[in-house]
Length: 216
Length: 216
DNA sequence: CGGGAAACGGTCAGAGGAGACCGCTATTGT
DNA sequence: ACAATAGCGGTCTCCTCTGACCGTTTCCCG
Image 1 (cartoon, rainbow over the protein chains, first blue to last red):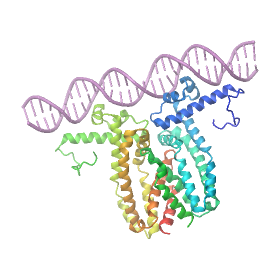
Image 2 (image 1 turned 90 degrees about the vertical axis):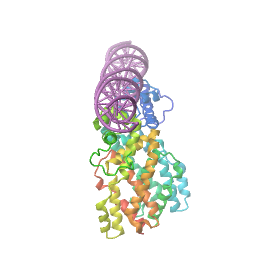
Image 3 (image 1 turned 135 degrees about the vertical axis):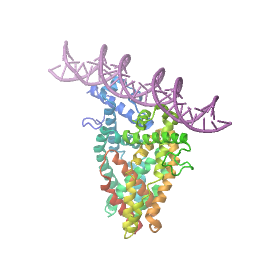
Image 4 (image 1 turned 135 degrees about the horizontal axis):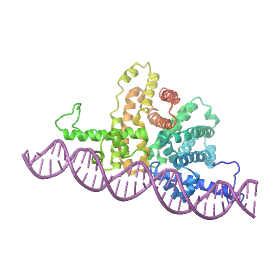
């Protein structure tokens, strides 16, 4: 629903299809509200009522688009994953990488960049659904394929950032998923301890391990 | 409450203090039931009623010991962390490590062992509370110090397993937390995709990275 | 050995949430 | 032009959960 082929730039309400537009707006409003609620209240305290209030829509309007809470949350999961896929292309970052004086510094820049993605609020929204999916089969079934696609995209993204030189190193293959999962595991601890992620001690360790493995 | 100094081995109901014993039994029954419910139903669907039913106690009995759901879950968090601290001392594992023909094989055995701890059900119970604590300040305050203590214990445990030789290597310090967090991050993905953890592809990668970093 | 409190068992009221339901309006295909 | 219907606003009911609030039993301690 976020990437229908026939929609590119519609800032003003295109009168071509007011009906379909309003529908899309409804869904979008509700899904964004769902994400907001997941972030603010957590999965357990996220009710259809709070989502409806946050979205500023009537109960009828919401229930017409999403016939049940389960259906809504599944859509929200897709919504979040889609948003992560259409990632905020690291524009200024390409320059930083280009400026890197060597592979060692490039590694440092890339690690910083990857770690930054775990500070995005969508990470927590995804985590809430992720953990809940363990005991919610319908959610799990929705997340499984989406997560696979996202994983692929992230791997490609990492390859782009590191560049063909580093990607070609023999230890790159094991380093990539270890960095990836280590960051996720580390980010989790910020749940109950919201310190400044820029001072994360592991940042130096990730760089050190990566340097050692890739620049032996 | 799980480690009062005056209790060591009470297998039979010591008649010295039947009152206190029954109290302890009440708390223990309820806390165990809470963990069971967290595992089976997840945080969101865990109610005081389901816990009470699972524990097989009356509402009065439960509410007398834990005056509110919040207080109960905080106690459950401590219960889980305490259980993880009194870890199931890897008895037969010490032999396996001793049998390791060299540091390379020792690394493999230790990695396998560490990964095994993430298959314990208590991991998921802790994760449910962990994630919930992000939006539940009281839980977070309870988990924060407990997690710090557990982290220390795990680090010591890892040092013991790897042995002074490997611990002394220059890259051990960064490798240790990276392995630790990477496993946590990896284990999380089993929430929606319950495959066989023994075939986890990252197992080989962890060993490879560790070997390369510690046995350069 | 008796008063008192701890430790219950069981019920109740109140709040909140999920989704069914009904009626209305504007769009849309023909 | 017009009936059909998607899209919606608002309400209402049923259910679940929480914690309060009884009453009752049992142990403890002077």
